[in-house]
Image (cartoon, rainbow, N blue to C red; front, side):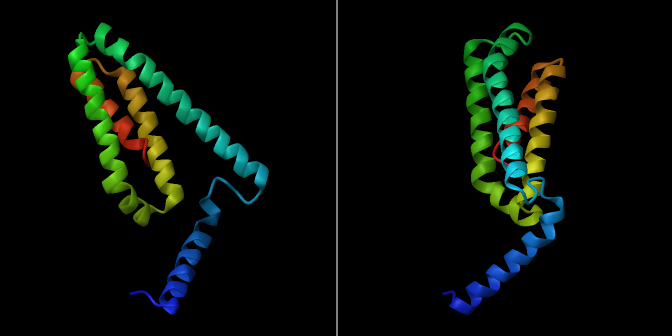
Amino acid sequence: QTTAEDAAAAARAGGAREAEADGVCPLGTGLVTAVATICVVSFLYNAGQSTFDSFFPIYAAGTLGMGPTKIGGTLTSLAAISFGVSAFFFSKVQEILGLTLTAAAGLVLVAVGLCGVGLAGSEFGAVAAAAGYVSGIPL
């Protein structure tokens, strides 16, 4: 059981860790900068997500020759990967990297995954890139 002193010490340690990250936090200290950053990240996330959800099935059918059953199975598997990262890995990654670097790593995975899907020349390459993409979403 945690005592009040242990909780206070943990809060101080967490606050010190956050203070060290102030220099790398893209949100800055101003309200306008913070809101603008959140808006830009939200826009980029939603643009990528809606593009992927709209065009991946068409790309998979037309370019990769996948049928509806295989596309549905692939999308379900990708959702399971995203859930797994969210449920089992996010907190561990966040403890190691901190919140800012975890978010940055997620955005990098999303960007690399989306580019990889577009550049993939095979079904395996496209699905592997899509797995990278969905792994970055929960981060």
